[in-house]
Image 1 (cartoon, rainbow, N blue to C red):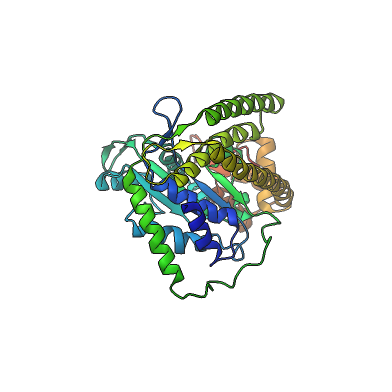
Image 2: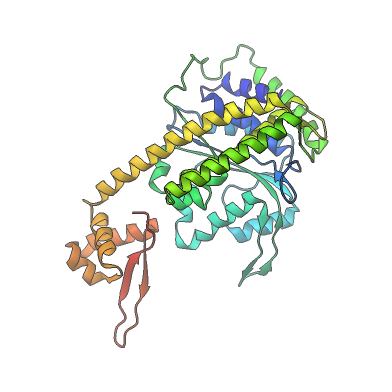
Length: 400
């Protein structure tokens, strides 16, 4: 089984969180079945898998399995991998030039991605990334290249970061953006449940090479199998219908209790994650079968795996909310905080008015305004005037 083999390959070399090692295996399985769909409306539910690791720097070993196992395996089977940094225009051109209908996208640092896309001239890139993950790229019109036509593509996205990402994500990240398309894997306090072997020590010096070649051979054969439809047996069909009803009902109830909460949409989305993980587990049990069937065994494995991810998400969400409260409190004592508080109370204002209202002058005011503009928290425009036009500043988002 690929899940066991890749998980074993990773955990015997690197002291990482076991679910993250399993996520690498599930990611590889999803990648080599680019045409597989699950029962659902329209053309069916695409079998994509987008894991997102959030854990401590260095000690978590988040990036190491990606670099030395997942990427290596994909390269060995000559799987198309998109460049991790791009503009939407260039990426559409690259996809068209290479004639890609599926690809892997691996971005090692989520924080850098989100920080970049908060800059005004890169604001379109995050929206385009969401289009990639949805599998339907809309056309673009640019001055340089005219109309660039979109199309369908199957992309599996994987990324990792530290909790510092909390400083740059807001509510829309979860409800309308990238957040509700990813499966968060959040390092829990109990991850070190058993001692791990020393880094890279397995006894046989050729063990890694032999295991990697064996796994790559299996993945390549599965890639050529071209799975198109994954089916449910009677038990799973009823379980899926029941889970769908319960989650939708609970999501509605949570929404009407608190319309501003992100939990209802995320709670419902985890139902989709369960179905995908169950299908990947079924494919793993039935390798080289064109139309694998999801059984009770697969469904229970997926339910247990996703239930743990939901617990991690709830913990991450709580940590993020606590960070927001601390950040707001901290900012109220800084120059940036004083400016934000002033703009919240008085709306759009000129620089001179901000200076007078906050007591922040000269270079301090310039530095604070530039910091807030770079973060994307405020915006500026040139006001209308018969004499010298003034530059007006206002809060851009309601995140503070």
